[in-house]
Image (tube, rainbow, N blue to C red; front, side):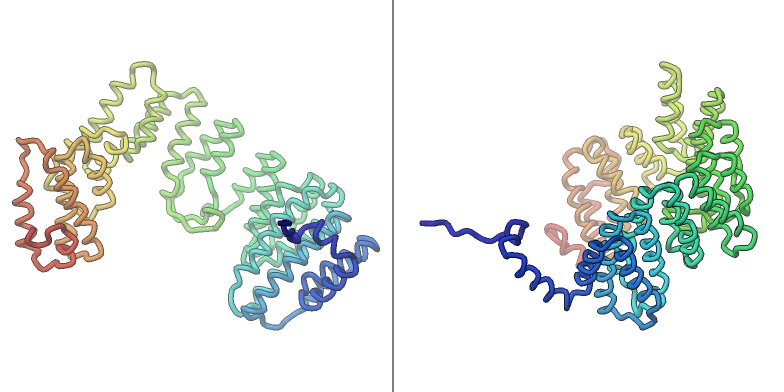
Length: 470
């Protein structure tokens, strides 16, 4: 039997259709598909030259920028496809023939975001993704443009910045500071410096000047600009980190010790947010210790690390502290640290430390020593601790599971009843492993108390094997 062959949608398959057939299909599709029509027109213009290609793209950009009609959800979906095609034409078609011309057009394209925002009836993530993708590609394109041609882009870049009233382009503009060669960077610096005294949002211009200074490894200019900021906008920790990385440890020490006293506006995960004086406190103290270490002030550095551990019981800080000690000194210091945690007033922080280290025997002793003090509402600490203790320290785990069950039922937290039932199952599993001399209420008596105090918690008892009478 002859095996039937299937036509494939690939280069060879389409070539077999013949030129005339392909042209007819493209013309039919182009009448309904604006993105395809624009791509074909751009490709045809490319046969004439990049100037004709640029003229067609300019025509579309001008038309889009002048438009004022409102954009509903359906139209936004169509526009996303059209603009994706337009960006592709600029970046791929024109970019291959005239990178500088394409860079100029893609900056104009990105500026369309502002007029579109005012025209949208509802937000359109699909449409904004087109622009987000174009920003990434624009940076890559501009990085390939010759330095003298980059200078010609500066007015367009600055216009984009000035139109950006809601900081939508902040990430893109900062990324540009890393791809501009010195001639263009210097030209933009001159423009930004000129607007600093009068621009209402001068901090954005100042931030970009700092980014340009960092790109040029001009740390002194960066520091001067940071000093020009209001106190509530100075990111002293970030500055200290940069100085430390640059090997300017004495300067870094001065900046890291400029501890904030009030609320500040700082970039957090790419957004400007209001943070309190304690924001970044741990990182600040550990950085100060590292800087002191580089300045050959080892004792001061270790004292700072110990102080940080004594306040936080952070296992990572203790490990760092121990790693800096001389040989064999760590054992005495570890015992000192364990004793400190044993005497902690915050028993939950102490328990978390011993579980995380791990030092399960000390965690169990802590649980039993404070048996009457644990509160089930701190379930985020107690539940993981009970699970970690269950295999090696069943008595301590039993204490914590009972605390959790009692709290859930006492407060009538219906959503947590399935968890309480699971904890009860764990209690029964641990029962054979409890020591005979355990000073703990017997499991049967514990169950009798639950039945007596909470007989009407039906959704709980229905989840317990044997139910209320079991």
